[in-house]
Length: 416
Image (cartoon, rainbow, N blue to C red; front, side, top):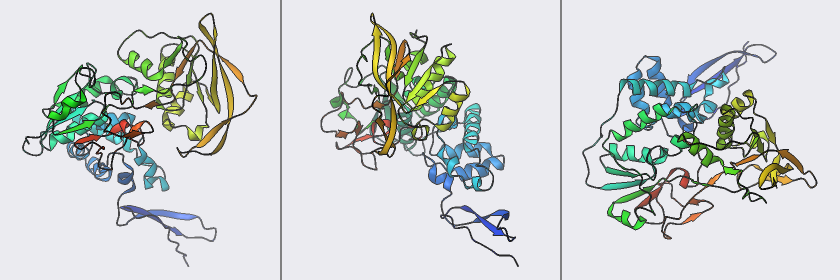
């Protein structure tokens, strides 16, 4: 007689049910059964795409319809198909059977298909009289402009640089995100009639007060200031910001290169910097103060860096930059151990006394995080812990002013 055991799972659009058929308790088969609820991939998606429907349309060969479906929520499917952290795959319950559906690859295929077809969109509703200013042209700013324009609003994007894209443009290396793809995605957004003012920096070329002529303002300037290491010798000429390095590299500027660069940090910026140095013929090393489990960089990017031969030293923190005759000759470091979780939810690094050692280097790149530059904002807009205060509806403490992306407290990724 067959003994049936139900497998308890959270509500979802498709679950798995298993049947035990022998005395050892091994599974004979797994079969999907419909269960009312939200598909876990849809629930995990950072931009609330209907992934389940996209997959169904792709399976039927309806690529145009699949592109239209995901573009309802996401103006950058070709970008996200390359650089998103794709938590949808981690949540995919197909993984309980064999492995998760390659959702990111499908999104990339569908996005590129749409770009090749030139399938851009027109406003969904008649034009309205209200005007909205969007400060910043990164993924958050352009996404806001895209959705507002499709709703019929008149949108003006203010960008301090001569080109659009924000960190998509200058913080992500070309080997991860080809700029041709980014240009096409931005063209799609601007085709909705969005007005753009380049080389206009709020606080320098125009005051924030002057933006009151708009019925609403959306702040999407991102996190622009690199967090300092706060160690002796950091003012040395050979200590550079990881963000500044990537920005100069992506703009085609000449970048000073050390022969043995050391990258301090464990986020995506640190990994991108190290892999970029490797492609420039250098042999970089990454130092991170926590363990690999606490590393905030995308797992796949860390694995790629390791496969490329980039050494990563864990549980190590900088203590002092060593100089001789004004030049960097090394970085004195301390070994760390992990304590209890801190405010970030990760275990806090604790220095081990007497564990000092020296890493030979002639260039140190700091990539331990970025914070908000609020120098152009009025005092009425409250902030704290390096981010603007905002409600779940993205409104700030100043009426008519909203904020999103990296300027607010949330996980920092392209999808957010």
